[in-house]
Length: 237
Image (cartoon, rainbow, N blue to C red; front, side, top):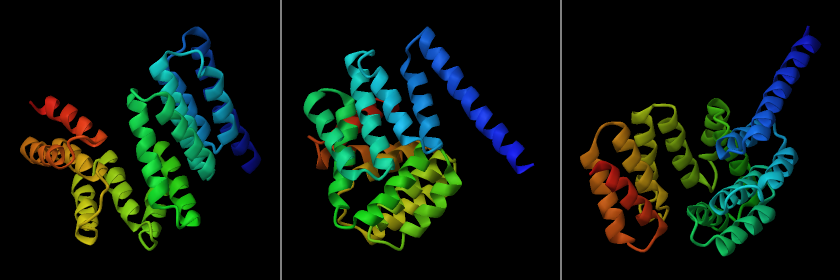
């Protein structure tokens, strides 16, 4: 019985993979590439994900090439290859300076830099980020709660807030951000106010979102986060 279930699971996984590859044979679309990459990561096939992305990185437009490069960096991060991920992010920042994907690479580099003194715990967090990417919420939640007892407590709070936002638990998401800011009032994680603004918008509080975004722009006008804050403000106005 166990063998039969395993066969069914593996067959189903293969069918999904084949179907997505067939879609790409008909038309190369970034949404399909992203879905298939997520499928590989969900099944812990990091090498398969890398080979797949490298096959398509020169078959898409410039902006999409940058996105694929960040995805490759993320996959290396999820697999615990911290130096490989860092090298890929640096390549994105240097080669695709004007692409929004370079902002994502910079944020990952910030994470690697702030947590570099505890590589074992950083690898644990990196693995959890992969589970978040695959929307495996229960696995990610349990692991993030364990990380609250480590030196990466700040990042655990933030990603728990993100998880609860994505799963629709707005009060719990906000409580995680409140706990983060109470414990780390001098933190420089600028993604925090952005996430808080998004949570305010999800809870139909545009005034709260506007106040947070405007404060972020005033304090850090030249940051990539201020750019995103301005974009969010336009959606409110």
